[in-house]
Length: 152
Image 1: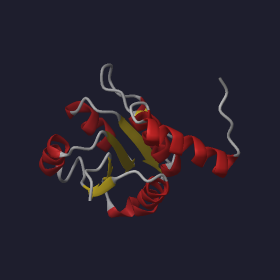
Image 2 (image 1 turned 180 degrees about the vertical axis):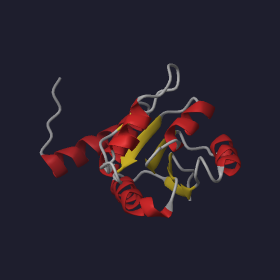
Image 3 (image 1 turned 90 degrees about the horizontal axis):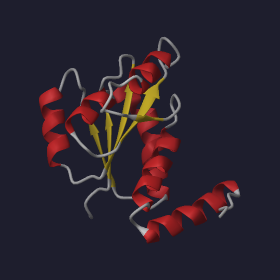
Image 4 (image 1 turned 45 degrees about the vertical axis):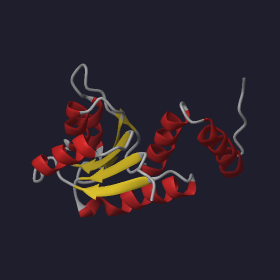
């Protein structure tokens, strides 16, 4: 197996439904990835070690409630971090605000609540900036899936 381009990290197995949506979309796009379940609260040392050693170029962090996971990742890497807030007691608003209100210098690109699909597409778009084959594949996929037409 090739090295993963995307690391999908969730803080809990309860986020598995959203993780599955991310993974199925990445598979559809032919993007190598790996999945880890590591909490920023319960497994912060293992999470930090994983972030430092992975060769992934983009991180997708799936988290609910306080949603510290994407911010923790952004604080220890220079690679893009995409946050996926998970709905919960406050319909995901708590998670969403936690992700978008990161301190200056540590941004987390955040998609809509439970929108793992969009997180995978955003990761593909980031990777496609330096991969012409993926860029063409993504264009064809968007056209087939959504009737998307590129405008010049």
